[in-house]
Amino acid sequence: MIMPSSHTISTGTNKHRRFKQKRKNAKKSMTTRFTRLKTEMELISKEQESIKEGQRQVREKFEAIEKECEQLRKETNQITQQSAITQIRLALIFGILKAREEGNFSKASHLAQLLRGITAS
Image 1 (cartoon, rainbow, N blue to C red):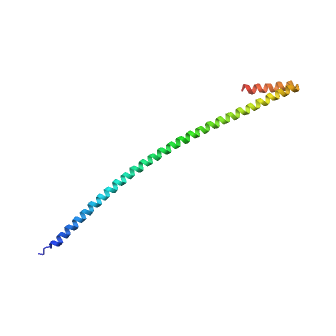
Image 2: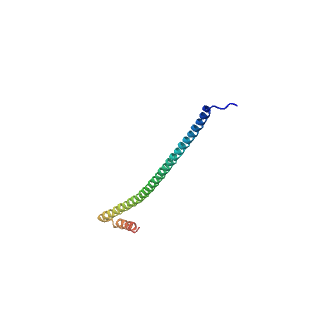
Image 3: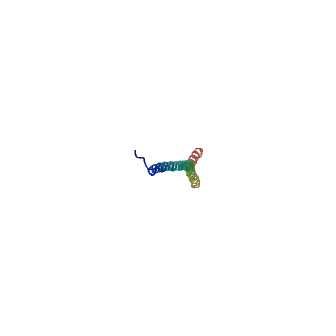
């Protein structure tokens, strides 16, 4: 029976130890990477939530501005209509005055009746 030399036994044991150490180091390295990835994912998640919140705020501001624009359009239209009605009234008043100056009382009466109709509306 041939006995293995002490050199081959220690070499095999050293290989086994080195292999165990490499596995241990690889496991630590992988755990470290997983921890780092988890931290990065949490950070990314927080950043995404922050972005979503910012987008929500921008959307709310935009909707408020749109509402205000619509209100301003309505007010502008109302002012334009009032201005047009005022111009018509003034034209009728001046027409009445001119008709009276010319002595055309039937025309003045007709224009006064139109003015009353517009004023009543």
